[in-house]
Amino acid sequence: GITLPVVLLALDVFPLRRAPRLLEKVPYAALALGAAALAFLAQQHQPAMRTLAQHGALQRTAQAAYGLSFYLWKTVVPWRLSPAYLLEGRLDPAAPRYVLSLVAVAGITALLVFTRRRWPSGLVAWVCYAAIVSPVLGFVQTGPQIAADRYTYLACLPWAVLVAAAVRRAALGHRRLSWSVTAAALLVLGLLTLGQTNVWRDSFALWEYTLRVDPTNYLAYTNRGVARHAAGDLDGAFADYNAALRFNPGHAEAYNDRGIVRFARAEVDGAIADYSAAIRLRPEYADAYENRGIARQAKGDLDGALADYGAAIALRPTYAKAYYSRANVRLARGDADGALADYSAALDVNPRYVEAYNNRATVRRARGDLDGAIADYVRALALVPPDGPERAMIRENLDAVRVQRATGKAP
Image (cartoon, rainbow, N blue to C red):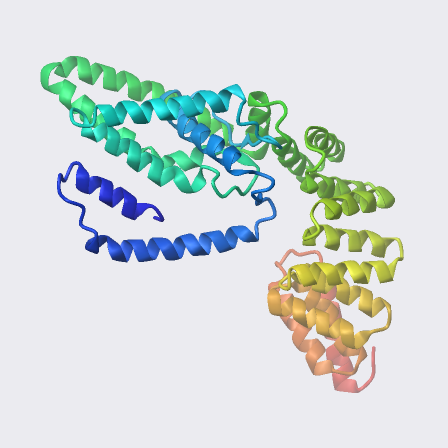
């Protein structure tokens, strides 16, 4: 929607063939400017946003030209599509694919300008396409991708309109031939679509296909590692994270995820080393701080764990799990007031946090607040599924507190 005013102005030229009506575009322009400002502010907080020093104007121009050419080519020839086309660490504008893209964009633009009187729809389609896709061409670069198929869904509609118009025109003189060609094209595209849906059937199929297209795709290795870990294949996940780091030693997420695997394998020192590497690469990585806190707590380093949980909370004040983890450390250090405050903070963020209700109830019971403890156990019990393994323990604790309140004695 950000570039809608530009598209509307282009449509004034053709097919409406009228002078641009600027006044009627003002409401859309105001909304577009507001949306653009919000998008830019949001991107400032993206960890992968590249500065001009890292990704200069020449690199951004080359990337934009590549995107314009790439999306058009993939629309015409939808072959070897990938969920992730990665941007190299340092883009070289003199590389052949960027030079060819610049030449192609300049050539297409010149040709369409030259033929604008005989074929105005071609130039208007090119302008609309470029306008719609411009916000994701890399002028403001966030994320690891140089391109993404999803960016074509709306931007390439002008080309679909042109093709439809061409088919309609051809049908006037060659009806049977045009229908045959259209049917064949739809059949081919349908088969390609069917094949593409199989790629997306699950995480393993998706990332294994991505690696067949690009065996150096570190993001695909990382995501397949996550899928393998979730399936219980720690060795496979570990191998994938190692591969991701081999192709991109600066990938903080792979260090963090490998640290999680190492911790699950009881390699606590290795886990701490990986979490620390992730933090060095991304000092604002709240999850890595929280994970390192868990590992330090497991080693008995309560001071280090407390510092890490505090850092995670400072970076993400709505981090319920970090509040919960810090509360556990504070309770272990005898700071019941601090633990109670942190459990409450976790529940303010996530009112369905069963473990936080249960632990806060334990603290309240120890402090003599039996009504508060009962309320917390009741709430926890209401949130646990009927077959939840913790249900029996919570019920037992609730019954014990009720007996204590009724008799004045702890059972």
